[in-house]
Amino acid sequence: MLPTTREMLDISIAQLETLAAFLGEQLGEGNDCPRHITEETRACNEILGSLRELIVRVRPMERR
Image (cartoon, rainbow, N blue to C red; front, side, top):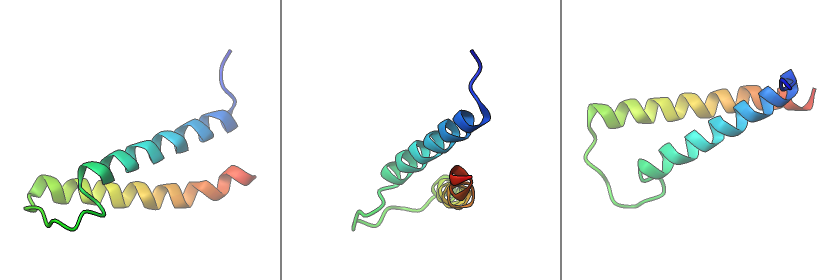
């Protein structure tokens, strides 16, 4: 049975939240130790920011 569009949205948001949490953890968010910033680290930080923005934008759609 295929998931409904509502279920697909819920699953997608959950997966985005999981990915954002993973990236945040790997980037050492909340860690007081400054890390050497590489181009790859900057790219991951940019991806993390974009994921968070997307989650905030689509989350209100959950209540429709």
